[in-house]
Length: 372
Image 1 (tube, helix red, strand yellow):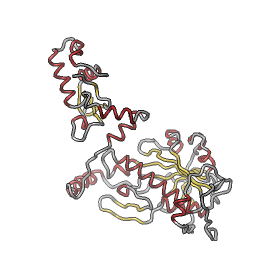
Image 2: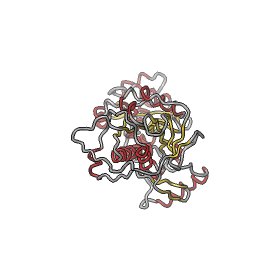
Image 3: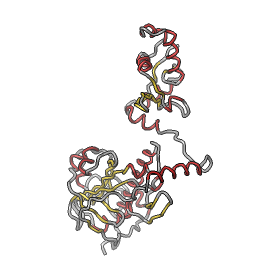
Image 4: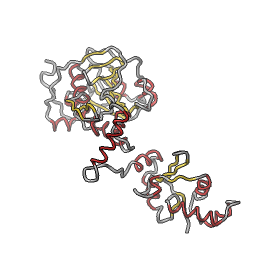
């Protein structure tokens, strides 16, 4: 019987030893939880790059009893690090279906599948008690609001544009805008979009988890780990520059430095010509305070999608053209924002402006009295 090394192994140092994990293994399998191996076992795995009869590798290990090598091969097969042809069918299917996406995408998706959740049916009280004990040991929860640089602050008007456009029309009219006019975005429209997309609608106090912010977009555990930076290019009454949006008082905080949108955004015209561009980041600690497994990264990505969609609908309802892109130079953007890229990391780029051309077939209903 021929064997082949699993194609879905990831290795790393844990507890002083090399641990190998098979991210495609089923929940409960030993390979899924990680197997600690030594140098000899690693060497054996190296001889099974392709389909190999175990008997043909015995003489390659001089100084070892053949029976012990057979035993080691059997152990590696028992824990799933070596596979038979039947066992390898699923990973061969993965190789074909995901052939262009590489190990990083595969590992993230499959390693975060089938995470166990504590629910009322399977012991919520016990799980919550254990989590609360951990939280109390770690100290107070992180603030719902991010760090402040102490730069000058500009309070935005709370005289919001009424978003009374028919909901169906807003859904149908929402389109990615790639060309913008030189006309400035109105201050009230700008303020309205930021308020309804990123501002708190209200707060709730939860024991052990602190003050939680309720936005118009859903967010796992109401952690709202995102931070909103804004490059203002062409907005009425606001000087161009780099700002942080402060949801606690609906203001902009002027930051030192600038972001080269042309460079960071790979020269995308929509990024460089919009009235304003939102640079969305996420604060790891704010999310990790409550959620302690890697699947939460999926939730953070979903949360960003919720925010971007709400932003796009608000912008459309306010008469603006929105865009969104994940094509940007992560590290350069983080450096420009003064971030370490670890505790706070760049996540998404979107923005809005006055559309240069109204798409044919997309209805436009001006908001009556928007500037009254």
